[in-house]
Amino acid sequence: MSEDAEGTEGLSRGGPVTEGVRDTGRRTPSRTLLRARLRTDDGVGIDACYQPREGGSGDRDEGVRQAAGRDLAIVVAHGFTGSLERPAVRRVSQVFARHADVVTFSFRGHGRSGGRSTVGDREVLDLAAAVRWARSLGHSAVATAGFSMGGSVVLRHAALHRAEPAGAAYGAGDADGTGTDGTGPAAGTGAGDAAHRMHRGRTGAHTDAVVAVSAPARWYYRGTPAMRRVHWAIQHPAGRLVSRYGLRTRIHHQDWDPVPLSPVEAAPLIAPTPLLVVHGDRDAYFPLDHPYSLFDAADPACTELWIERGFGHAENAAPPELLERIAAWATARTGRAPRHHGGGTTDG
Image (cartoon, rainbow, N blue to C red; front, side, top):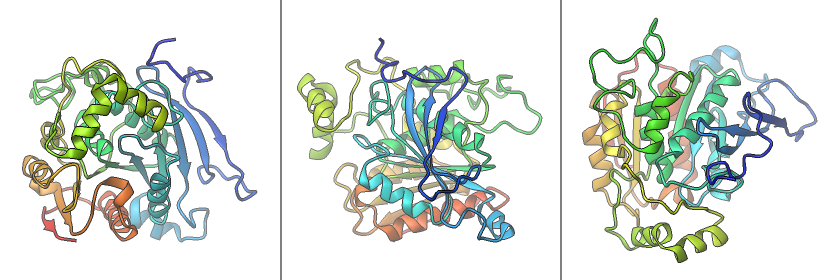
């Protein structure tokens, strides 16, 4: 069995295999806790879970619901060595579920998902599969929220998977050559980017709002002790063994060739989709030049930057109050028109 196909047994060739979990004794369409095995465009099996919003089974007025977020689902992209079953990811899901329905999943090579981690390259295909699943469950708006490595993935995903203008045909090309169709000079060249272009006819993978928390701006950063440890785990055989058996994270042994579109290169391609960049002033992995670089590269008309005092790194350190504000931001941005908003910086 190939590395990319590892763990994909039991997949339906036509789409995800989905199971309802009877935690309340009642089963209602699109309001039941679901576990699914998704299949990415390159054939990797992804473990995913759908959590309905608290009170989302009919006890809230439908008009208020639509005004608050147009039937929003938030798709959570965890950090490196995480998974949907990690306590920190579950906590994020529980807080977000107070505002919207939530999809969590494990990136390839993590937890019960198949394949091996490419640390941000082909993971864009995993996120695309999760977004498609959310839309298949009936959600008219989907926001993506990524942490650390997941933050880099949501940025690249938003740049590579663009919503088509009304009346445009998928795969028709981009007349102005800006690369928004995945074929122009601004498109990425990595393996995940190439797979995106190959399967661009698969619709419904775009996002309506993007949140990148504790995300790197550029690849190969080794400026902190924490990131030097991460690079050891990725690049050395002993580190990959520790990751596999100690952290349940299986890492691909091959280097990127070619190097994929970086987060800071992706940032300007996201507009007019609303983008929120969140970073802590006590982040031990990526210093503050990373969020500032992302914000400076993005369109200020639809981008916000929050620098949070006392916040460390990613989902493990995110306090409930911050998660509440992130979910409220996503709910507001996906329910408001027009989509351009003034940028700004907050100090949390």
